[in-house]
Length: 237
Length: 299
Image (tube, rainbow over all chains, first blue to last red; front, top):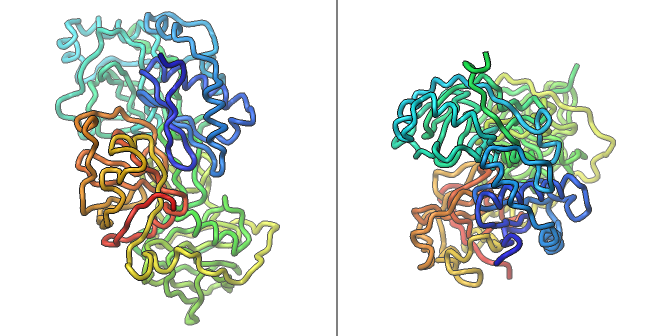
């Protein structure tokens, strides 16, 4: 039984940390960000912390002592996984060692995204899940989601922690153009397209929220660790 | 008058680049920056710039610019014939541009990217702390076009120390001379085990003489000529996407390697079996389609 991540080489200036799954990624990513933000010497040369589905990449400035960094990683406190079990059940965990550091939070720990649930695939998602469209909306708005990782295009976040009934496959043929602000589902994830792009996720709604603005600091709303609640525009009126 | 470069003509692609944009990979914005980092830095050192100031990355020459105000410039990277008005100028040398004089950059005989560095730097507005054009995410200044007037920043307190730099060892020729094959040094990657492990030939990655494929750009260099074979336990395994570094050697499903350069995506879903050293990345950024390349571990 392993207690820490597997540390893999990634060239002269980086380490790739591998863990068992997404819950462990969320915990490790939060612990790493806290360590980097904490400013201790061994973390000072880390420029990027890049979580993904089963790994977290640490990129450093050239010349960094990766052996010392690996030792600092092994010395990190073991993350508490229980937070994420509770999160998956839709409650808000207390701030603990695994919560994201302040600088990565928006609006005091979470963001609300107001959605018009008018997506082109809403009826199909309802059919696939055995729910009616109103139940899909309720399921999507009733849990607290959390950004697991980014990628794909600037400002896009893969959000986890949704109602398990909402797991649907990607569309068989991707759309060549998904409009900006589309709120979509695929697998265990939900996400919001920050700009028009090709995409294969199931579209359930749209939002006017600007999730990526390079002139804003931070430019992305959906940074890893951020907690998100979706709000139905009809219900919020 | 604000000192500036007035762009009269461009070749295939001219981009504004600096040391890049670290710190945003987790929200899908890569590091970007000059593709041949050492050439950009040499230019900065020659004119007395801080390395964080931006230069022009000129792909395959074809640039003509007119000086507004008196400027000090240097050309580094791929050596190309160049002149100021009718006077030929040297490579990796300090060049004085009088107000109104025109610098013309021809096609390099070898290599891809020539850097034009101006004392004071190209002073366009930074985006997320950098003036680099990222061709993948679209973040940063747009490509330079004829008619652009590029402001030049104030010169720093540091003065140039030398008039000319010796060519860096990798500059001429880009290959290794006699054989005409560029040698690129690689270090272990996170998924070396997928192709037999470090110490093996990495499924044929090492020891093969590869061709640089035409479908190569600032995002990555595609190699052709052979297929890297996965080790038996990994043949039909899917890899969930994971973070990518500049210099990553990735093996997509078809087995033809991709060497990721400055504008690489933040994450990728194929195994990275090795990573180029910093100087190998700079050399790779100067390879042309059709060039021959071999990868090898450090001696």
